[in-house]
Image (cartoon, rainbow over all chains, first blue to last red; front, side, top):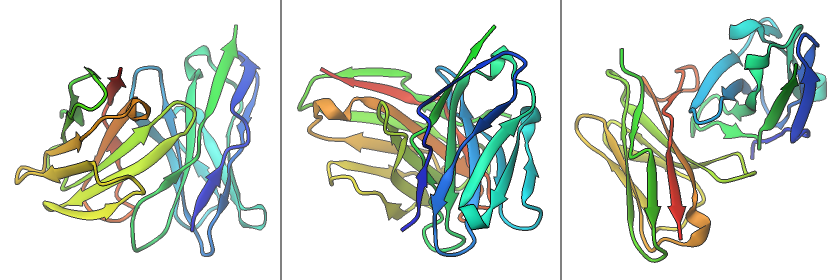
Amino acid sequence: AQSVTQPDIHITVSEGASLELRCNYSYGATPYLFWYVQSPGQGLQLLLKYFSGDTLVQGIKGFEAEFKRSQSSFNLRKPSVHWSDAAEYFCAVGAGGGSYIPTFGRGTSLIVHP
Amino acid sequence: EAGVTQSPTHLIKTRGQQATLRCSPISGHTSVYWYQQALGLGLQFLLWYDEGEERNRGNFPPRFSGRQFPNYSSELNVNALELEDSALYLCASSTGPGLTNEAFFGQGTRLTVV
């Protein structure tokens, strides 16, 4: 069965600092990988996704993520964080066929200090 | 273009009662997904409907049920409410099966069971 681990429950960074949110997945074949962001009181918005090809994926709002098969990781990065980036971030993994249902991690809460 | 809309925004029920949550997908989307987001647990998959049929179900008891109407809107029913059913219920829609079809999320219904 597929699973996702986000080892950090909370991450605190200063505005302007770089950011890396960790995501590790468990899945036998090449996974479909996603990062979503949830602002307070909002639904989830897709930041970026990886299906195949280039392992460095660019997303919206200046975010990027790198798929590393050897480490079973899909970490989210941003070179300079803005106060508006404070939110909950979810990593998700899905199988290519079958259930079509992505499995979500528990989320990482990003706190941005001025 | 309207996004995924959910109603009501907030719902307060007493233990043992029934709750009905509604979801209107984006126009043209035939797939509707329901997730439960309980505090600290991330998103747990509940149900997936496509073209009016239930396609997949998560690991939830039968008192969680739903349906999809001919216009692709959907309803989630929770019977015999328990305190631990208190959570944010999120609906998402996509153009059809397959993880390459992006799922768009609504803002959720906050269900509180007292």
